[in-house]
Amino acid sequence: MKRDNNHLQPNPDPSSSLCGGSSPGKANLWEEEATQQDCGMDELLAVLGYKVKTSDMAEVAQKLEQLEEVMCNVQDDGISHLASETVHVNPSDLSTWLESMLSELNPPSFDPFGAAGKTAPMGTLDDPFLGGPAESSTLTTLEFENNNRKHQKRGQQIFEEASCSDYDLKAIPGKAIYSQNTRTQPQTHDSSSSSTLNNVKSEKRLKSTSGSHSDIFPPPPAVSYGIPTDSVRPVVLVDSQENGIRLVHALMACAEAVQQNNLNLAEVLVKQIGFLAISQAGAMRKVATYFAEALARRIYRLYPQNPLDHSLSDILHMHFYETCPYLKFAHFTANQAILEAFEGKKRVHVIDFSMNQGMQWPALMQALALRDGGPPAFRLTGIGPPSHDKSDHLQEVGWKLAQLAEKIHVEFEYRGFVANSLADLDASMLDLRPSEVEAVAVNSVFELHKLLARPGAIDKVFSVVKQMKPEIVTIVEQEANHNGPVFLDRFIESLHYYSTLFDSLEGSVSSRDKVMSEVYLGKQICNVVACEGVDRVERHESLTQWRNRFGFAGFSPVHLGSNAFKQASMLLALFNGGEGYGVEENNGCLMLGWHNRPLITTSAWTPANKTTATSTITN
Image (cartoon, rainbow, N blue to C red):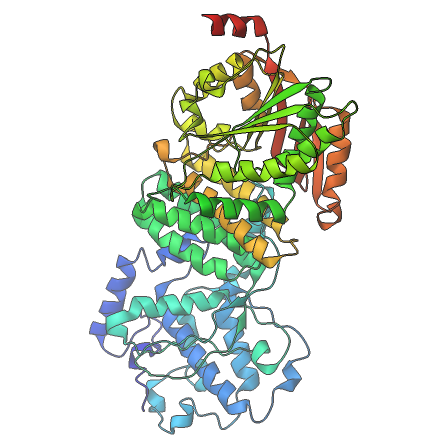
């Protein structure tokens, strides 16, 4: 079939303002389009750092077609002489690269319209590569030769800004596969010029690498101006590092557009984030995908309607427990503090605000069983949310713990409480006994931050805890600030935080556990970014903020012992040889982090004045 390239014909007349056909009317049409599209600049690419004029796209598309035909013709002759070194492509200098490729590969008998055997009249195609007048090259509006240094300096500036910015976010390096087996539908300039130009512009991001013939010079995508094609595109390698930087910038720009309620721009950017995320490997791609989903939910107002089914939540929680040391560290350090607080006590009572599957308590029960002088009588009160299937999951956990207690000869008593919120609890419900008879410890792992969505809820819980007159209160919370009033600040903090968390999961041995753990964290990302009001329950706060809250509520800090620090460090050696993980002591609290970035914190507290708590109960 004969190719209709009249609308791509470069104008040999330098006086023409835009490339067009021989008809003045068509030139006027192109001129009007360029004026309407912000002086010819593509808005989407401009946001991501490219400055490409629409008038240049036609010539670039024409050269891509020529290179495609050349590659088809020279495959039989071989191009192994070009495989000795990597060819790097500057996305802003695609036209020059195409020119050099054509000049090197173009055989003397090159037929620009190839296998079909039908050629367009040479007089209608003025191109420097086909013997056309050299003046047509002046129609390129990117001015590669004049602005090459500017583009290089600008690329370096983007790199430095991304590395040295306040966000402290970096692209996680890696190789990735991109855009496999894609086909384009036949298009015409009049009906779909904008989508065709976008296809051409996206090609500017590609970078070839050394290897086989298809890897060195992958054919460009089928830019079909009215030309049907059934060719299947091979796999192309993408410049992952450059796209990683652009991906971070696109995420920031999208979040800023959401904050400014510019939903049209945010919608465009969130789609571009998905495109850029494909080029990334490992943690960066997964994090970007989850944040893109959360942004899309916020843009289109597709908020999660119902909380996770408890059984599914428990499954995800257990996989997260097995994948990484965070929950194990939380349980271990809290248990150590409770064990020391119960020293010499004959009867002890633990009130757990985060019962889940009860995975924290077998270790404590075994430690109590080995205590000098024999184990104390152990009473456990577990509090958890109601189950969607109406099953008594807390009672099932209690039966399992009772069986363990019987085996290790520990006197055990258990009671489960179902509560939609910890703020619904009252001290009178817990069958508290005098402190002279029974020592009480209160434990909470990743639960208190959820109370911050309801005004006054955290203060009520603090009041109830003080009425319990506990020997110790152990708290484990995320070391992050996702509860600020400004959306963009929360977004930046959460992007940094979860990027670090996902990066730490990459060393997981079990791929199944890792995938489920990523889903577990992805649900949190969705809540932090997409939800607002009482629905946004993942309101993590830093240790400094929790210190202020506990101090104002009348609690004093309890210093976690050096034994907890040493043994926690030994625990980390079981995960990836301890490489990457680190324990840090902070004014009596213990922090677990990944590459010097704290991620969770364990702290311990006690009521500052138990006399006040006693009088409150009496009243």
